[in-house]
Image (cartoon, rainbow, N blue to C red; front, side, top):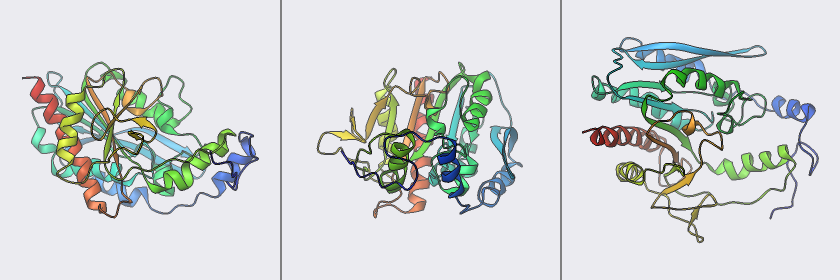
Length: 307
């Protein structure tokens, strides 16, 4: 156990209050542009897709419209697929992998599935390259009733009409070195708990649903991504991020009880991708490509099971 409480905000052993959250917020600086990086790309998709604004985040002087991209010729007789990216705003390939999939591959599925893609769930955090939202809340623990995260609540409302109709949901994430150097220590400090050291896996892995793991579905995605980038091995304890590996590159969480985005619907096939962008063996483009490969493999597998 790491008992060195060196995080610069708060008092060791005491959860943060409003003053500490305000201090933390004041230290978060804009490092990139949601409008330039994301909204401009969504605008270029309008010729081929329906683009809808499903919400807006008003954080002081900062305003972020939230957009989802839908298949233009939506057909209720077809299976439907949800792709979410940027639930954690700092996880870059989740955002740009979703956009790349739309631009380069969505046409392959026209007339076969309905697509609903929310490329950047957390734009405030995207701009500041952070895991949390403006209130120091993790959106990916907030997909629950009366959500404390406005980002999560907006997705819950967007998906509600499809909650029992989705066939596939792929939630695109990354595990980065800053998880260990910044975000886990910040979480411990925020909650007034000791900081537990961990190990960042080198490679791609998946988080399935322990209540409905769908191992063959997860394996199909792993097989496809392995052609693009390397799959994370287990650590010395046979685990990935402290969780037993159930198959090469696959762990399972109870996604609904943890309030994870992958549990926002009752999709038959659901998974959370985890790309490792800090690996010396992976480029940013490979990370985007891995996310795209995961989405395509997920849809292809699910359609094959439909006969």
